[in-house]
View 1 (cartoon, rainbow, N blue to C red):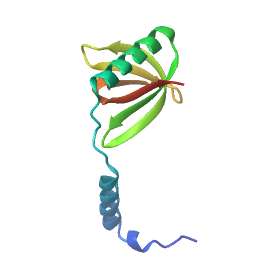
View 2: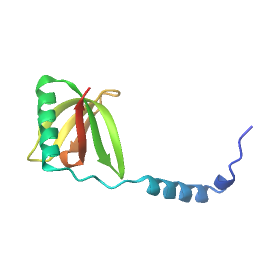
View 3: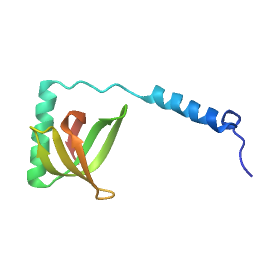
View 4: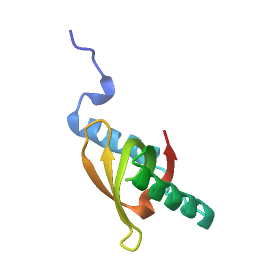
Length: 105
């Protein structure tokens, strides 16, 4: 037996409502101070050299996302780094400007 959802009876309406809900959940990208950026850089470099696992919090499409894994490569001049996800072991190439916080596990 299916549960009836009155607001989702028409697929087009459901898609529109879902878009509105997602828009309301979006947050602006936080601005980091110079001190916070330096701390992120030091933590990234230390994690790269010691191969320690880190928690990364980054901004993507209006949301803050936290992930766990290892730093493989950091390019400060090119504003990017490579992060290996702990769960799926996928290589993720990200911009340093998207980072909000980096902490050791």
